[in-house]
Length: 373
Image (tube, helix red, strand yellow):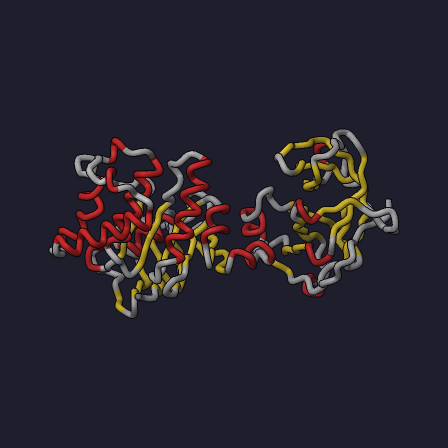
């Protein structure tokens, strides 16, 4: 198979429209790379540049050491699965899957073998082969689109939001099928989505894009536990990370009555952004000498847990106060009640208020940190 190498890729439509800015990525054989980001961040444009559907303004694309930057799509040996499936409505399932192979003048025997093997992988029954796309369910059309890519035996697989047209239950099932399917392939996979659940569950690596730039490239676990900047911290994770702008004094950040020591790399800022995931907020224990108090003003039932919105005492009145969101069990309701909270130093994420970049927190204690009321 072939390694995919993207170097300083740039796409400019006009001075004000630059969807891809100096993107550099490497995808090894068997790796599953997801381009994750909000609408308009450049992820689909990057995929189209790899496929040859658009031409870069500058930069290079290599597949297996071969420069394909300006080659036509048909000369790159890549297979793309589109959001709309892009199946030929007048063709049967079999002919849709075999169409690219027929254009390559591959023998009928080999075409039959490849299509049969792909159908076995994708659990497509033989009785579907004579149907046309309009006679299939959404999940079946998705499998046919994947099958058409598989039979080509490409050097690189490209998938552009292939699950976005499926309902929630079907999306979950097809996502699991895609994961199992590509674990058996050796070619690089580049997958585009704005859905972080897809990115985190499918990928070996995730590239988070924003405004045409790669904000962070890491395995999913590291992306979640050590976001490189404030954008990644806020975009990855559901419920979203608490991002709190705090005033600093004497090398501490002030959250209500809680005085949290700043990490060594913070310097002496006037303000800092503190990130805390809702699952890392805990009830303060009776033996804690320090705590922070707050009042619950909203409870959202998520099924297995309640998501509490808590206005922290001493941070302002009414809507001006700092709000913490926290995940707690559903066995009781705290709406309108005052509660005391603690967080753990190792679960804190610090960000520079000007640049948004991560400030490393070297503390690794498992003891909770809180502050007196």
